[in-house]
Image (tube, rainbow, N blue to C red; front, side):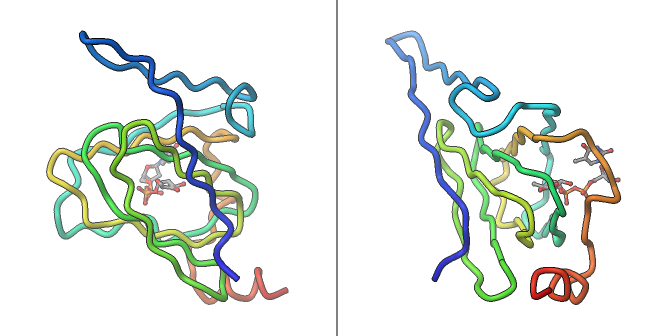
Length: 134
Ligand code: T46
């Protein structure tokens, strides 16, 4: 058994002048994009996340730099390093996530299936365990 996530490699359209990656909501990803946000200026000791979502699906990129995501489904934990600008980490709901070990230049870009809604967050780990274990 392993945590339910997917690493998706997107095509790179490139030539000698540079590279381009295109993402289309409900085109080459499994949901319609309602929101985009990005995180930068993270310190090397930072640990972010530490929550799960009740409904939200997300596709997470490191278009610049790298960082690590630890995913936890209430039974298992797995750590994934995001370090390729064309690779997206697809996470469905009910996965506890923490992310850290940011490179100094790291930018985390997230495509989300829903608008921001604080009531969709589970920010307490014990409550998360209660919800996923039914
Ligand atoms: C996730 C990881 C990868 C907003 O006002 N709108 C937004 O769309 C978001 C995402 C956040 N916020 C506010 C809420 C907090 O006051 O921005 C502040 C920081 O949010 P948070 O502590 O949730 O940020 P991270 O980096 O821990 O987590 C974020 C997402 O919340 C989360 O869904 O998976 O990035």
